[in-house]
Structures are given as C-alpha cells and as structure tokens.
Image 1 (spheres, one colour):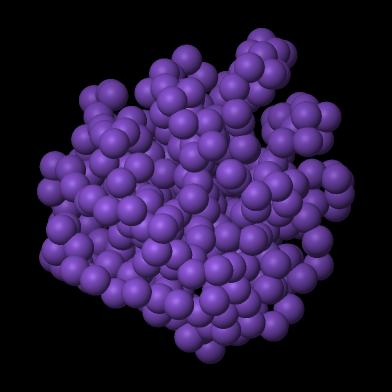
Image 2: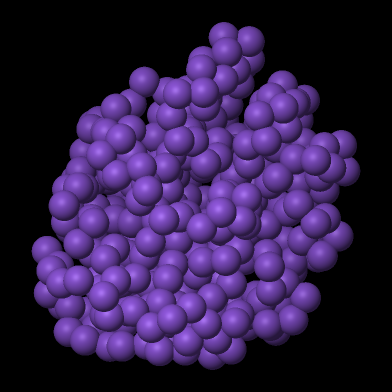
Length: 332
C-alpha cells in the first residue's frame, strides 16, 4: 500500500522535521491519572473532554520520546515561521516555552510516565526540568558541531557523565546544506563515542517539511551505518516519508535500528507501518509527539485509538522505548 502522508489544513497540524541546531529549542490540565490507571497489559482506554478543546484518551502507560520545552528561547528562523504559518496553520503557542507544572499535569492525565526533552549543549531549560523531576524527564542532546569532533565529543562526554542523557540527535538536512548523509565519515567519531558511551543516536529521516535538501535523510544511508557499527543503537526520528518501505526493510535487516513516530499524527501513520508493528516489528516502533508542534494530548489520544492489539499498543507507547533508551528499566 502506498504510504499516505499527513493531511495539512487549518485544523490538521501534521508533523515536520527540526533543524539540528534548532532541534532542542524547536527538534492547563488537572487531575490524578496515576490513581486511575489500570494494571499493565490492560486495554483500558478512557476518553474525557480536554481543557484544550480536543477529546483526550488516557492510557495505562507511555513514554514520549521527543518533546520540546524551549521553543521560545531563541528567535525562530524565517523558515520556521513559514512552516508554522503556511504548513501547520498554527498559533503562537507553537513557538513558546513549555511550563513545567502544565506539562507534568498533562502527562499525569494522559498516563505518560516519562518524556525525553530535546536540548542543545549549553541550553539550561530542559536540564532544569530533568533536575526537578529526574524520574519523569531525561535529555536528548542535539546541536553538535560534527566538523569539530574532538572538542564536541569531549563536551558530550562531560554532559553524559553529569546529566540524564537518553540519546543524541542529528538532523542531516539541517546542517552543512544537507551535504552530509548519515553514511558520511564526518559522523564516524560520533558513532564511535556513542558506542563507547552506550548512547543511542537518533537521526531525522524522511523529506523535511521546510524547503531544505532532503536526500541526506533517505533511510538508505543508514544501511552502511548499521553495517559498519553493528553495536550502535540507532533510531529514525519523524518517521520516514516517503521512504517508509525502505525504513521497514532496514529495520528487518538490522536488529539495532528502530523508528519513532515523532511529528506524525498517529491517525495518519501509513498502513504499511501499522502492519509491520503488528507483525515483524513489534519491538521496533516507538511513540513520540514532538510537542508542542503536535500536542501530547492529541498524539497519545490518537495512538490509543489505533487498531492495534493491547500488547502491540503497549509496545509502541511504552515497552519499546523502555528497552531502547532505559535498558529495560521501568521509570519509577
């Protein structure tokens, strides 16, 4: 079946890639959801009105693998403003910082036990979230200067030693004019260090939404990476449109290659991916929202309504990320 991309219109905010340097700064609910959650493995889904206007469905447990909390920390580039206005038809909230208490409330109401917050070297906001609630938040480090590998990797090692880092992130289309696909040797020092630190590397895949060169994000470039670095844990970010079938074939081929569905409204995920999730890819696909670009409330609620068996849904929302990013250790 041909992959169907997200619809775009005034009321349909489909997902889009984030620039490497901007990924971390780009790439109110009340109640006590934990007390109401059913036991693990249950297919209990509760739909209730959301104070943000959309129906909200709670789940037993979830990990959101990509959340932005620092969108307002820097002046947005022109292409991001264009994307917000022309592609998402979004309001000003998309480019604002996230409030700690509001995020925790939303997570509790939905059943999201943990979120991974994108950040850059030197950025403080996401780190402050993680320091306030280390059982709820960890970091994804982006904005790496791969053309100056030694000082960059020394700094990365220092951050990993002192902060709860779950992965490093790179957007190949968003730096170097898109001239460096993941198979380029410029990434090899990062891959080597990531293997040494046992740190996953997550990379944008699929055509970027902004008018930027997209060929570097064709998943086929990960073929050589996974072959050269079989120990490296790699995940594609933001799906893989229009190369879903290539991404699926590569995940079948390489056990350490995964994919997260950040920036994709779950109701628009292609049937080929859902079939893979039900069959050979039960352990490979991970949930992520890319909030506030797509809200956590919307993406969790839509994910809960997918035609997936309870075990498959739990894998997608929770267990796969638990294994991949937290070595099977359940967030407390």
